[in-house]
Image (tube, rainbow, N blue to C red; front, side, top):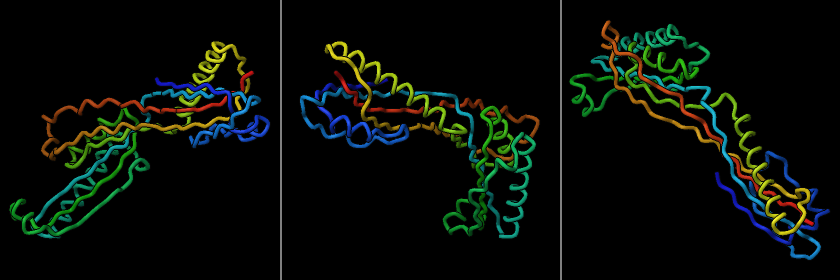
Length: 249
């Protein structure tokens, strides 16, 4: 938690005019008002920053595969089998079609260097999806996809269903903190805290993006297949900074 404060016997504008320029709660931080020094304009400027956290509500899984082959026909056939097999496996594991979005697919001829690396293969087919699901299902769906041949999978983006509630909590906490600081400072200076005449805010949200990169193969789909990875949801954090100018008497 971080907060700063500043006391001033000045205001951006005469209070009667400045009161009509108070920004709404969703306004972004802009430049501070220019101070017009006057014995009649007495203000106290306070800045405060607060954070709010919550467990992620959605896991966006990156799922994909790459297959190689000596001919285009054979490679495409293998890719088609992998594609449909992976989708079926994820659906069986609890994913839904509405949660799956195709992200990219490519059919390509390998370069001479790649052909040497792949020992005779001349073509490559790759495909990727983003699968959104509840955090509790992420490990099971990812495991099912890998065992079905998704050999280029594992990235996860954690997020909230809506940023609004978390942002509002951070903003409320920052505003209350700023008001408390203003009251304390005004009392310590022998002044009476008045109404706010100007306010700005800035809210940012941090989404943690851990990467679980897995180079798994279809050989995992047997009786000795390992258990799903131990994946825990990350926390999402919103940070709000407010600056409020209060009138003082």
